[in-house]
Structure formats: C-alpha cells, structure tokens
Length: 259
Image 1 (tube, one colour):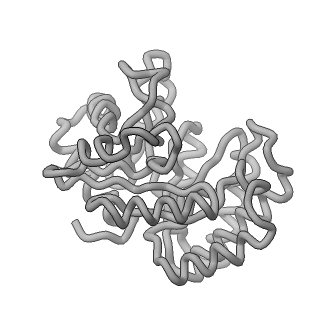
Image 2 (cartoon, one colour):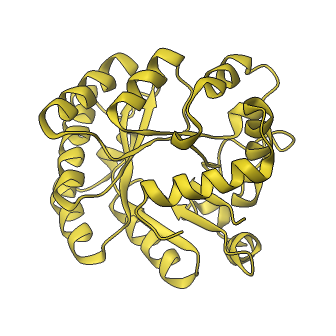
Image 3 (cartoon, rainbow, N blue to C red):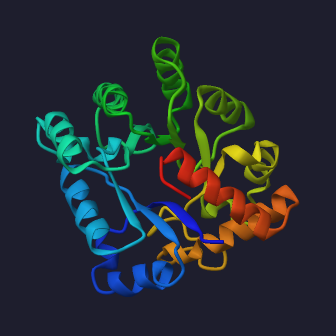
C-alpha cells in the first residue's frame, strides 16, 4: 500500500542540493504521495513549482503565524488570488504560536481567522499549527464550527492532551502525528494516539524538521514517515499493513483526492 506524508516543507533550503533525489526516492515507482506545505506567499509559489514538476507531490498555500510579518501587507489578498488561480489542495500552514515571538499575537489571530474564512470560501481543508496556544485556538475553531458547520482539515504535528484531541475531533478535524511519537520519553503522546479513532488519524514528517528515531536531530525526509507508521501501529496494536491501508484512505479523504 502506498504511503502519504501529509505535511512536508519541500521548499526549505535544506533541500537545495538534493531535492530531486529526496522526492523521487519517496514517490518514484511507489505511488507514494506527499503534500508540500507552504508557509507564506513566496513559499506557496515554490510549493506550486515543486508539485508541478514531480508526480505524487501536491501543494498547499497559506501564511504561517511565524512568517506573517515577513510577507507583504496585502498578503491575504495575494493569497486569495493565488488560491483562485492556482488551486492548491489545502490552505495552510496556518494557526497560532505562543512559543516564538515572531509576530504580535493579535495579528496572528486576525490572519488565522481570515484564512479559515478563505478556506470556507474555496472549500479547502486547513492545515493547522498550534504551539502553546490551545486555549486560544480551540475557542476560535469551535466558534467557526458553531457558525458554519464541521471544519475540514488537519491538526498537524499533534502534541496536545487527550482533551485537546477530543475537542479537535468533535470539530471534524483529523489528527496528524509526526516523528515525536517515536521519541522514547513520549509515552503521553502515544497514550493519546492509542485512544484516537483509527479513521481520524494521519501521519506526517514535517520535513525537514522533527526527524523520528533513529534520525532525531538530523534532517528529516518524507521517506522517514515509515518510522512513525511503525511506532503508531505498535501503539494501536495493529499490523503496519492494516494501518497503512487506513492511513491511505484517511489522507486522501481529508485532502479530497482519489485513492
């Protein structure tokens, strides 16, 4: 069964010398898929170019909370036009971040809400970043669901509590687990994953970041998603084959792609 890395930053400069081999090593002759996730306007353009050049690669468009101030003042208008013309399969990476102080928090909130509205406008799933901001992000999402119905999207690189997971699942979101679930001291995250419904979970690398064991601290790659799948299968008490089949269905469902 093919694999789907639902979140990788293939436009990162860490791949400047070997992007072709990294992508083709994962997708060529395997039917594997990877979503190249954007962090700003220029990043969205780079992700489009990569997806255009490589079969099995898809692209998103969006403005990351930590890169808002690095984008033009009219970036939301530019993003709207880009989505309309280029048709990404998802809107993201968007969200809130209290861990890093790269952007005023009130501006993060404005951009987050505006991009949720854009996703509704174009019927796109959203890719959500949340770091140390659960008490801020969940009420915003719950208010949107109350007004507009279930939310299509993914809580990427999930590291929250089971209460956080339950609230995300009740919104309609899928939960994506990255390499941190493989770390030896991360029993709490594995306990959360074990309680999640198997038809609402995904895997990702967040490459080039968050490499799983045994590559922790090194550059991550889409092909390393297999290590996360192995740990998740053990956590859930099912075979890798069963999990790979379910992950393939889940990934394509949330991203509106054919199996």
